[in-house]
Image (tube, rainbow, N blue to C red):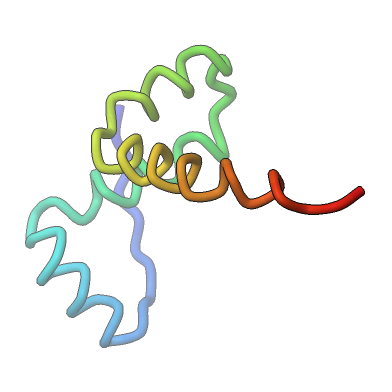
Length: 76
């Protein structure tokens, strides 16, 4: 069952949502952002969902590769 929710946003935020997400898709976008914070998903399911996000995975890989050598030359 779905419920309707009315929220107030800054005009620039709303315009950005319409531009980037598209009219008619904002509710699903917000639900996807909020769901993990309010519904107890299993950790495995959450990690699986994150792994399906190719841009997030690419960013994480790039970050890991760029930080891998940073501590190698430090003295103890």
